[in-house]
Image 1 (cartoon, rainbow, N blue to C red):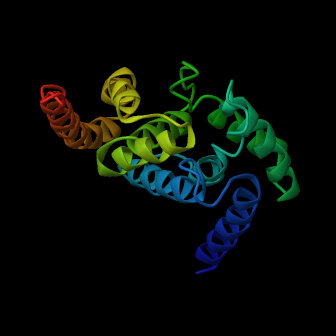
Image 2 (spheres, rainbow, N blue to C red):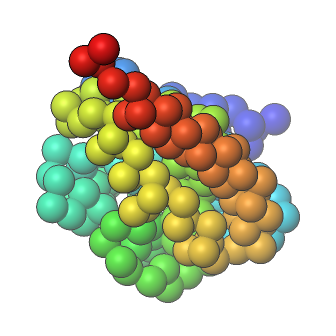
Length: 202
């Protein structure tokens, strides 16, 4: 019971800190962080891992999104200050910071710990499936990106994610979720092609 209370308090503290750093409706905001944490828990339950590292890493992994060049490093830097304020030891902070720095698919860094692999996979899984499709178009609104540009993003990044998974659990979930994305992309391409063939100059 005491452990549950401690986790609940930690999550509340972390949610407060995340809310200060990101917009409430941001595609990489608090809702995303909480989904990633749940996916981390799912993978950890199957494959092991230190939840005391994973919980803060998952909650804080995107708080530096204002830095578009390297959000992982920026997030890790901000996370370090937050964790110090929350009373974490230097060893714990160093481990969590490395996990956050190494989670990003875009930064092309190879995770060096089990926890970093779990966070990396969980973050990629949230970009797949029906939720992933929704997030692509949420992000497209923020970036002023049209449907065809969003479609390119699916091909250039999203559909490649299953091949980038590190854990067996991540691979299994990704295989299921990518089918949903693939079917959606095919249907979208089909509809766009049909519209291209309609001549407006009748």
